[in-house]
Length: 563
Image (cartoon, rainbow, N blue to C red; front, side, top):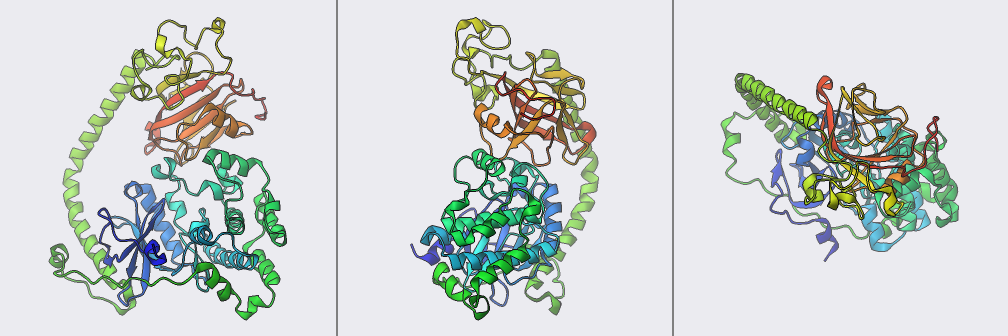
């Protein structure tokens, strides 16, 4: 397969032929936010058009953030960034178009040729740092800087996807497997749910450049939870890196954000080491070796004829010269706005029916909650009823229904609380599963006792909405969300909770499928897997999820919150 064939893939059956007047000539790839296609301006200049995934497009909060970040990204102008040309956060689907960069990503280049030589790494760090200067100057933090978001053009690197990572952060899609950013390139404060600043991007730059120098991630591969634990709790092994680069990497990868180098300092440090090449144009020669021959870009796709009838119904809007290549796109936007005005009038008439339907739905949900509370817990501490499977009970993987040696096969023969301690079974903590555990302003949880649900606010774990997206709070319980987790085990919870101190965990980035490890002061460990999250109306907000408890599975915490 040729290099050009690898880059420009044919459109597939589920790919749209065009979006907002931009016709697609090829498929460039897919990522966490959407699919990317090759298109062209009316003048024939290549563009990369990113079409947002339906999972994100259906989230009103995403659209709001996406629109805000697009407006900020429009202001970014830099030699080492891919300029944003056009975008529409209100489109169906939302999309954005940037200049197409003719070159492979850093990931592709390293996978093809191996680690980069020291001069190329210096040019890489200087170029990306200069791009971060332009991005940060507009008040944007990239949040997902990584090798696949650095493209290698013939004259230097280009940073892409800036200004849109924040839009996806906190939506249901990112909370169920598409986390922003990528675990292997996160900074410690990002991995632990702390404050994200420009220094976060500097740490990611250090990791990205280390990948270029080593040919693999600096903190290793493996499960995301293990990689994040190493990032938060261990020092990077700089002995693996070229000796001449270690001082700069030490500054970029400092654990404390305030101790990291600034992008301006990185640019100056690299220029000093490059010497005369920094002013003599030595960069292009290095990049031609790294990026390889430039692929031939497919030609633009001509407009189909005849035009679609829907577009022909409305009179065309005048095209102003200032619109440039985006004139047809803006014309279509005006047509959409006029159609929206008509639909709004119709929508008002149907609004009353919608309110009635919502009211009946809310009453039905409330009745089901009341029935559940009257009937008691869905499962006992020993798991689901005999004869049912873990998938039927709704318990998360690793719960009592699946645990070796659990008493689920003999339901009703043991007391609540697990196996008989006199039976001589293993001393390893046994999981106890509880399905559809409900949390709201009137209920709380406790990892102590035979039942986790506590009427009122007397339990140690409480749900509240004092912050956007709501939060979990614990008097003596600490929390850690496992991003990208699927069936997190007690050993993985132990690992991430080992040095945890947060007694309040924001839920803005949590939705259906999110997994939250928790541990109380007696060493009981819990895994709460969210099944339903409703926080749009704070006064009616609630969580429902499956809870697994391992009694005395971790070292008890002191009152200060430390191990």
